Image 1 (cartoon, rainbow, N blue to C red):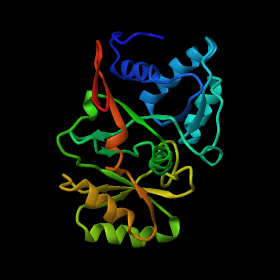
Image 2 (image 1 turned 180 degrees about the vertical axis):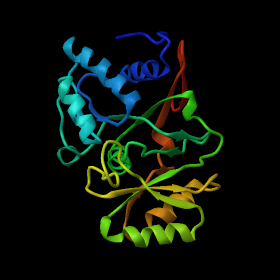
Image 3 (image 1 turned 30 degrees about the vertical axis):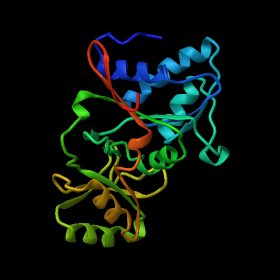
Image 4 (image 1 turned 90 degrees about the vertical axis):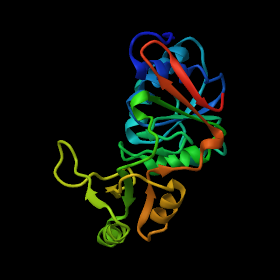
Length: 231
Protein backbone atom coordinates (compact mmCIF):
# COMPACT_ATOMS: atom_id res chain seq x y z
CA UNK A 1 0.00 0.00 0.00
CA UNK A 2 1.34 3.41 -0.97
CA UNK A 3 2.26 5.58 2.00
CA UNK A 4 0.94 9.14 2.30
CA UNK A 5 3.39 11.64 0.93
CA UNK A 6 3.15 11.11 -2.82
CA UNK A 7 1.97 14.66 -3.54
CA UNK A 8 -1.66 13.77 -4.35
CA UNK A 9 -3.93 14.84 -1.46
CA UNK A 10 -6.87 12.72 -2.60
CA UNK A 11 -4.79 9.60 -2.98
CA UNK A 12 -3.15 10.22 0.40
CA UNK A 13 -6.58 10.40 2.07
CA UNK A 14 -7.84 7.34 0.23
CA UNK A 15 -4.72 5.37 1.16
CA UNK A 16 -4.97 6.30 4.84
CA UNK A 17 -8.64 5.27 4.91
CA UNK A 18 -7.79 1.84 3.51
CA UNK A 19 -5.55 1.36 6.53
CA UNK A 20 -8.60 1.33 8.82
CA UNK A 21 -10.00 -1.78 7.13
CA UNK A 22 -9.41 -5.08 8.91
CA UNK A 23 -9.72 -8.68 7.78
CA UNK A 24 -13.30 -9.97 7.79
CA UNK A 25 -14.96 -6.55 7.76
CA UNK A 26 -18.09 -5.57 5.88
CA UNK A 27 -17.17 -2.21 4.35
CA UNK A 28 -19.50 0.42 2.94
CA UNK A 29 -18.03 1.83 -0.26
CA UNK A 30 -18.93 5.43 -1.04
CA UNK A 31 -19.05 7.23 -4.36
CA UNK A 32 -16.49 9.66 -5.72
CA UNK A 33 -12.92 10.16 -6.87
CA UNK A 34 -11.27 10.03 -3.44
CA UNK A 35 -13.01 6.78 -2.44
CA UNK A 36 -11.86 5.36 -5.77
CA UNK A 37 -8.29 5.62 -4.48
CA UNK A 38 -9.33 3.69 -1.37
CA UNK A 39 -10.67 0.89 -3.55
CA UNK A 40 -7.42 0.84 -5.53
CA UNK A 41 -5.51 0.21 -2.31
CA UNK A 42 -8.03 -2.31 -0.99
CA UNK A 43 -7.76 -4.26 -4.25
CA UNK A 44 -4.02 -4.61 -3.71
CA UNK A 45 -4.56 -5.76 -0.12
CA UNK A 46 -7.10 -8.34 -1.33
CA UNK A 47 -4.46 -9.75 -3.66
CA UNK A 48 -2.22 -10.05 -0.59
CA UNK A 49 -4.86 -11.99 1.37
CA UNK A 50 -7.26 -9.43 2.89
CA UNK A 51 -10.81 -10.77 3.10
CA UNK A 52 -13.59 -8.15 3.06
CA UNK A 53 -17.05 -7.68 1.62
CA UNK A 54 -18.20 -4.35 0.21
CA UNK A 55 -21.62 -2.69 0.21
CA UNK A 56 -21.64 -0.17 -2.67
CA UNK A 57 -23.56 3.12 -2.58
CA UNK A 58 -23.96 3.47 -6.35
CA UNK A 59 -23.86 1.56 -9.62
CA UNK A 60 -20.59 3.33 -10.46
CA UNK A 61 -18.99 2.13 -7.21
CA UNK A 62 -20.29 -1.41 -7.73
CA UNK A 63 -18.78 -1.53 -11.22
CA UNK A 64 -15.39 -0.32 -9.97
CA UNK A 65 -15.44 -2.75 -7.03
CA UNK A 66 -16.11 -5.69 -9.34
CA UNK A 67 -13.24 -4.59 -11.61
CA UNK A 68 -10.99 -4.72 -8.54
CA UNK A 69 -12.23 -8.10 -7.37
CA UNK A 70 -13.94 -6.77 -4.23
CA UNK A 71 -16.81 -9.13 -3.27
CA UNK A 72 -20.12 -7.30 -2.87
CA UNK A 73 -23.38 -7.61 -0.97
CA UNK A 74 -26.45 -5.37 -1.07
CA UNK A 75 -27.70 -3.47 1.95
CA UNK A 76 -30.54 -6.02 2.17
CA UNK A 77 -27.99 -8.77 2.75
CA UNK A 78 -26.35 -7.32 5.87
CA UNK A 79 -27.57 -6.37 9.34
CA UNK A 80 -24.53 -4.26 10.20
CA UNK A 81 -21.67 -2.59 8.35
CA UNK A 82 -18.39 -2.37 10.27
CA UNK A 83 -17.02 0.68 8.50
CA UNK A 84 -18.04 2.94 5.64
CA UNK A 85 -15.60 5.05 3.66
CA UNK A 86 -17.14 7.93 1.72
CA UNK A 87 -16.47 11.42 0.44
CA UNK A 88 -18.12 14.81 0.94
CA UNK A 89 -18.56 18.09 -0.93
CA UNK A 90 -18.42 20.32 2.16
CA UNK A 91 -17.39 19.65 5.78
CA UNK A 92 -17.89 22.21 8.55
CA UNK A 93 -16.04 22.37 11.92
CA UNK A 94 -18.82 20.35 13.61
CA UNK A 95 -18.36 17.59 10.99
CA UNK A 96 -21.69 18.29 9.35
CA UNK A 97 -21.64 17.49 5.66
CA UNK A 98 -23.09 18.33 2.29
CA UNK A 99 -22.97 15.34 -0.06
CA UNK A 100 -24.50 14.43 -3.39
CA UNK A 101 -22.39 15.87 -6.19
CA UNK A 102 -22.41 12.32 -7.55
CA UNK A 103 -26.22 12.08 -7.06
CA UNK A 104 -25.83 9.17 -4.61
CA UNK A 105 -26.68 10.93 -1.33
CA UNK A 106 -29.78 8.83 -0.55
CA UNK A 107 -27.97 5.50 -0.81
CA UNK A 108 -24.95 6.99 0.96
CA UNK A 109 -27.15 8.02 3.88
CA UNK A 110 -28.70 4.55 4.11
CA UNK A 111 -25.31 2.85 4.16
CA UNK A 112 -23.92 5.35 6.68
CA UNK A 113 -26.92 4.79 8.95
CA UNK A 114 -26.21 1.04 8.97
CA UNK A 115 -22.54 1.55 9.84
CA UNK A 116 -20.72 1.35 13.15
CA UNK A 117 -18.20 3.90 11.94
CA UNK A 118 -18.02 6.44 9.11
CA UNK A 119 -14.77 7.65 7.57
CA UNK A 120 -14.96 10.67 5.29
CA UNK A 121 -12.06 11.20 2.89
CA UNK A 122 -11.45 14.61 1.36
CA UNK A 123 -8.83 17.18 0.45
CA UNK A 124 -8.60 20.53 2.24
CA UNK A 125 -10.73 22.30 -0.39
CA UNK A 126 -13.80 20.54 1.09
CA UNK A 127 -13.36 22.13 4.53
CA UNK A 128 -15.44 25.24 5.24
CA UNK A 129 -16.40 27.43 8.18
CA UNK A 130 -20.09 27.18 7.30
CA UNK A 131 -22.06 24.94 4.96
CA UNK A 132 -23.35 26.92 2.01
CA UNK A 133 -24.52 24.48 -0.62
CA UNK A 134 -25.75 23.98 -3.20
CA UNK A 135 -27.76 21.25 -1.51
CA UNK A 136 -28.55 18.25 -3.73
CA UNK A 137 -32.15 17.07 -3.37
CA UNK A 138 -33.48 13.80 -4.79
CA UNK A 139 -37.14 14.03 -5.82
CA UNK A 140 -39.64 11.54 -7.23
CA UNK A 141 -40.62 12.68 -10.76
CA UNK A 142 -44.33 12.94 -9.89
CA UNK A 143 -43.62 15.66 -7.30
CA UNK A 144 -40.96 17.64 -9.17
CA UNK A 145 -42.95 20.85 -9.64
CA UNK A 146 -44.38 20.71 -6.14
CA UNK A 147 -40.98 20.31 -4.52
CA UNK A 148 -39.45 23.11 -6.60
CA UNK A 149 -42.23 25.47 -5.48
CA UNK A 150 -41.84 24.47 -1.83
CA UNK A 151 -38.08 25.02 -1.92
CA UNK A 152 -38.46 28.39 -3.64
CA UNK A 153 -40.80 29.50 -0.84
CA UNK A 154 -37.98 28.82 1.61
CA UNK A 155 -35.79 31.31 -0.29
CA UNK A 156 -32.88 30.71 -2.62
CA UNK A 157 -33.03 29.24 -6.10
CA UNK A 158 -33.63 25.74 -7.41
CA UNK A 159 -31.99 24.22 -10.49
CA UNK A 160 -32.82 20.88 -12.05
CA UNK A 161 -29.41 19.27 -12.50
CA UNK A 162 -28.75 18.45 -16.14
CA UNK A 163 -26.67 15.54 -17.36
CA UNK A 164 -23.30 15.72 -19.06
CA UNK A 165 -23.17 13.86 -22.40
CA UNK A 166 -26.90 13.32 -21.91
CA UNK A 167 -29.90 15.48 -22.75
CA UNK A 168 -32.25 16.23 -19.88
CA UNK A 169 -32.04 15.95 -16.10
CA UNK A 170 -29.72 13.79 -14.03
CA UNK A 171 -31.56 10.66 -12.88
CA UNK A 172 -30.34 8.89 -9.73
CA UNK A 173 -29.71 5.15 -9.43
CA UNK A 174 -33.15 5.09 -7.76
CA UNK A 175 -34.84 6.51 -10.86
CA UNK A 176 -35.46 9.96 -9.35
CA UNK A 177 -34.56 13.51 -10.38
CA UNK A 178 -31.78 15.52 -8.76
CA UNK A 179 -32.25 19.19 -7.89
CA UNK A 180 -29.57 21.58 -6.68
CA UNK A 181 -30.93 24.02 -4.08
CA UNK A 182 -28.84 27.19 -3.86
CA UNK A 183 -29.59 28.68 -0.47
CA UNK A 184 -26.41 30.53 0.53
CA UNK A 185 -24.89 30.13 4.01
CA UNK A 186 -26.86 27.61 6.09
CA UNK A 187 -27.32 28.92 9.63
CA UNK A 188 -28.73 25.71 11.09
CA UNK A 189 -27.92 22.60 9.01
CA UNK A 190 -29.93 20.24 11.23
CA UNK A 191 -33.08 22.34 10.82
CA UNK A 192 -32.58 22.80 7.09
CA UNK A 193 -32.01 19.06 6.66
CA UNK A 194 -35.25 18.27 8.48
CA UNK A 195 -37.30 20.87 6.60
CA UNK A 196 -36.16 19.68 3.17
CA UNK A 197 -36.49 15.98 3.94
CA UNK A 198 -40.04 16.51 5.26
CA UNK A 199 -41.31 18.00 1.99
CA UNK A 200 -43.59 15.38 0.38
CA UNK A 201 -41.90 14.04 -2.72
CA UNK A 202 -38.36 14.50 -1.44
CA UNK A 203 -36.49 11.21 -1.07
CA UNK A 204 -33.51 12.81 0.64
CA UNK A 205 -31.25 15.85 0.59
CA UNK A 206 -27.49 16.11 0.75
CA UNK A 207 -27.20 17.75 4.18
CA UNK A 208 -25.99 15.12 6.65
CA UNK A 209 -25.69 16.51 10.15
CA UNK A 210 -26.38 13.38 12.19
CA UNK A 211 -23.22 11.28 11.88
CA UNK A 212 -20.54 13.35 13.64
CA UNK A 213 -20.53 11.02 16.68
CA UNK A 214 -19.31 8.05 14.61
CA UNK A 215 -17.26 9.99 12.08
CA UNK A 216 -13.57 10.37 11.35
CA UNK A 217 -12.54 12.84 8.63
CA UNK A 218 -9.26 12.18 6.83
CA UNK A 219 -8.05 15.35 5.12
CA UNK A 220 -5.45 14.58 2.50
CA UNK A 221 -2.57 17.01 2.03
CA UNK A 222 0.38 16.86 -0.39
CA UNK A 223 2.72 15.19 2.11
CA UNK A 224 0.49 13.69 4.79
CA UNK A 225 -3.05 13.61 6.22
CA UNK A 226 -4.91 15.38 9.01
CA UNK A 227 -7.38 13.45 11.15
CA UNK A 228 -10.49 15.25 12.44
CA UNK A 229 -13.09 13.89 14.83
CA UNK A 230 -12.94 10.38 16.26
CA UNK A 231 -9.30 9.11 16.25
